[in-house]
Length: 358
Ligand SMILES: Nc1ncnc2c1ncn2[C@@H]1O[C@H](COP(=O)(O)OP(=O)(O)OP(=O)(O)O)[C@@H](O)[C@H]1O
Image (tube, rainbow, N blue to C red):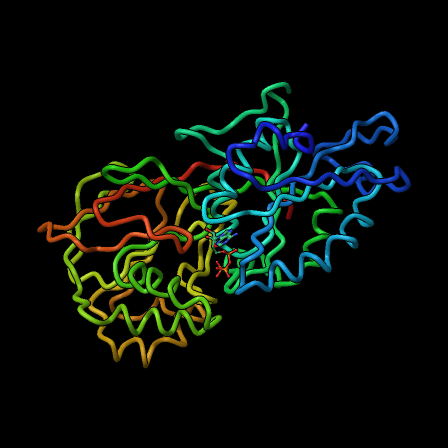
């Protein structure tokens, strides 16, 4: 059971506390997934692991979580063990999630921003394949949950979710789940990496790289990151191969964005027709943008009305490979706001890969 896995995870001190609840109330009556409608007495309690980044949103996540936990325990009383797991640093959420899934957790819930969600999503996989519970049959699957409490919380926006933890808890209590797609991105010299929101290449990825250095300024970090990214920027000729077809040259690329969901950069609706339930990724390419184009067209990027602009194209793909026409290096790649290195890269979709509380 996930709530009893403190010892197994001793390699990284963390971590879990267990909160057994009185069996007063079953918040999951007759739900379709994970329950069979039988009386709660005949159903084993489920282990829900909450992976909390105490430093998210400049420490706001940690503070809010402390206030939230008693309410959460009350709300989930009766059918769930609430397992609290505080991250100790970057990447720790990946290890916690892997351990929780192997131990048979019924749900792993990211509490924090897109970075924490990204790490939890990567924790669903090991060496490119989904992780399975050790002692449960193949029918068992661990659900993903999100209590969005980050700076940008961009993934939540696609579903219209607010940065409201109480609303998020109600989603978990309701228990409705959807199977969302996950993107997988590979590059030379790196293991497959998974993303649930948006992966991107060149200027936006460079801006994301610098934005992460300015998180202490809240949402302004994206503005500072973008200004910094323009220094030394030049549009690049790239070549792409879509769905295993022929190579195509795309000249003067400013940014190439691959959306599983719609938003990045703190609310920019960059891939407005992306849908994490579609089985496809949406690729939006900005070509030959100058700095002043961003000044005059920025509002369109935020409202998602930029697809009709000159120099903007969009297409649905299942996979895409991206390289420089003349390799010069220094073309940034990121996924879900995390810097992954530089081109070349290739990216594809894993349809309906994870069940998420929705
Ligand atoms: N205990 C910790 N101390 C420092 N950093 C941590 C810790 N736990 C996790 N992190 C790192 O913090 C990064 C950012 O966290 P998170 O995404 O939750 O908040 P955010 O950056 O404020 O929000 P958003 O990503 O939505 O803008 C994560 O990518 C993770 O690597």
